[in-house]
Length: 395
Image 1 (tube, rainbow, N blue to C red):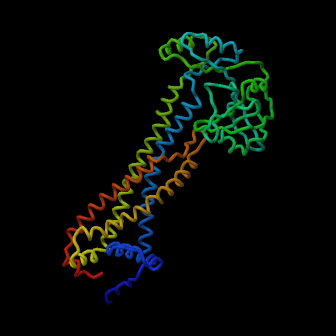
Image 2: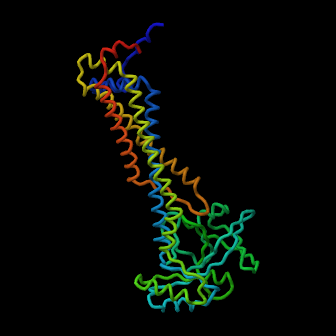
Image 3: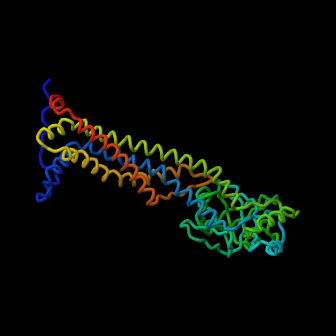
């Protein structure tokens, strides 16, 4: 029933390995205190690390959405409008569209619904033939570089390659869903990175030869003069061969209105929760440290240490925990982000993992602000310590 025996203090491992290491008295007290309680130190560092990781996890998705938009709507799709035809027509329609007032440049493409087969695996997709040197419909490889379509063979999205268990060099069976019931074996020559949707592509001449219906197209892409936008749209809608006209700007607005809006709202809420959790973790770390060291800090005050010297012990410990925990949190946040993106990928979209310096800086700032607020509370509590009452309290 007696009081807890006094802890055994001794030189740190670092001091024994490096005898000439020069440290001030307060710093030595701090370092020895952390080493004497390795479990508490470890869990405090992990707490700060996971608080940082939560903020990273909640904010990096803003950058991911921006990258999706940049790659899909600025690099891959550079047309202003896409015109769908009622039925395939000869490539003369491309020249007719180019000759319209307000149209700057036009290209044609051929899109046919197919089902790709590889053993027992199959997937329904649109097979599209585009000009080999297309200026409006570019493909991006898995390294986010421009991909030049080979003269022969299929280019599939990375998602399709994974789902069909294919690699470049394999052959895939193409089942035409145009009513002909034909099956054709085509080699896969490359993979393409698509963040939104899935697809398969060939060069337009290779697609036309494979389809066997001559030099036909059933879609047109064009860039138009913004001042003539409405007149071009009105003229196209009146054409009997035009099934529909879609605008890239409308697709982008629809993306932000549906997926982007939901995604960014979730990200904002997650970021807010991450900040609150970060504050809670850091604040509890300071409170626990203050509760455990209340008697020691009061003893130092009684022995003549000035308030700022006593605060130095408490705040320097927190600073060291932050210094160790924040970089670890960045690493944990990156791996959690990879896991989240892998779990969220689907046929509809596959968000990329992009963690920028802005995200890392923001996560560190949130944790630092939480630490400053917690430190302010701790300093006020230290200043209000009842020295006599604390010294009378048994541990």
